[in-house]
Amino acid sequence: MYSRASRFARGLSTLVASLLALVTLQAVGSPVATAAGAPHDIVVSDVPARTPAINDGRVEAIVEVGDIVVAGGTFTSVTPLGGSPTDQASIVAFDAATGELVPGFAPELNGTVTDVIEGPIPDTV
Image (cartoon, rainbow, N blue to C red):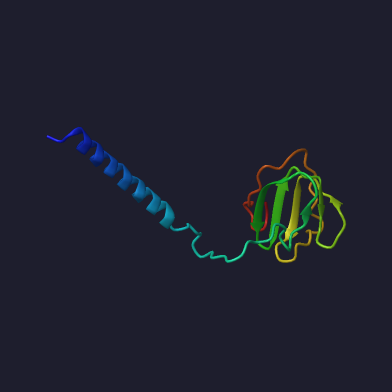
C-alpha cells in the first residue's frame, strides 16, 4: 500500500509533467495557417492604390464583373483617383485596373445596397 506522502508525490509529479508538456506546446506553438498560394511578406496598404475613395458611409457589397468592380453600400459620395468628390449614392462602378469611374453608371436607387451579384447576362449586375 502506498503511503499518503507517496500518493501526494506521484500526483505532484503528474501535475508537474502535465504543466511542462503544456508549456512546451505553447513555446513550440502550432504552424501558422496561411491561404494556399498567397504567401505575403508585407502588409498591404490600408488604402488600395487603384480604387475610388468612399467619402462617407461604408461598402456593404462588392463584385468584380469582367474588368469592372461594382460596390454598393451606405455611402453618398465617392472621389475618383485624382478627381474631385462626386455625388454617387449607394452604388459605384469602376475599372478594376485603373480605378476610373465607369462613365454613365449612375443608377438612381431608393436605399442602401446590401448585396451586389453578377447578372444573368455577361458583364451585368
